[in-house]
Image (cartoon, rainbow, N blue to C red; front, side):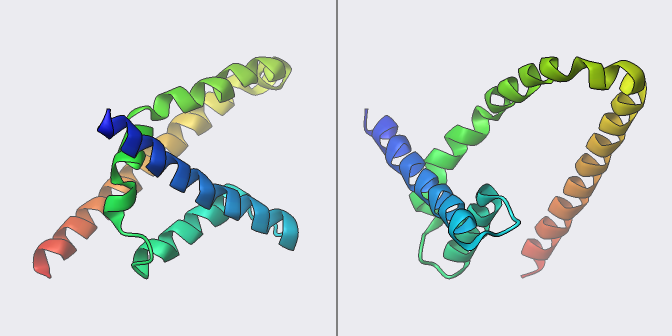
Amino acid sequence: MRKWFMIAIQAILLYGIYWVGTFLEQVLHLPIPGSVIGMILLFILLVTNRIKPVWIQEGSTFFISHLTLFFIPATVGIINYLELFAGKGFLLVLITIGSTLLVMVSSSAFSQWLIRKGEEG
C-alpha cells in the first residue's frame, strides 16, 4: 500500500513539472512543446539538487516500465491517416527502421560512454 502511495505522489510531482512546462509554453508563446520544457525543468531541478532523484525514482520507474502502453493511442491514431501511407508506405517503413536503428546505436554509444566516464571518476 505504501509503495503505491509513493508512486502516486511521485507521479503527481512529475505531472506538476509537466504542467509547469505546458503553462510556460502557453504564457510565453514558446515554439518548444510544454513537455520538453517540463523535461528541461526537471533536469535543471535534478542538477541543482532542488529535487533529489530518490523523490521521483519509484514514480519514474513505474512510468518507464509501462512506457509501451503510452504508444498505443498514437499507433491507433495512425488509422486516421491511412491515405498518407498508401503511396509512400514502404519508404516510411524504411525511414522508421533507419531512424530507430540510429537512435538505438547512438543511445547505446552514449550509455557506454557514460558508464566508462563513471568508472573513471
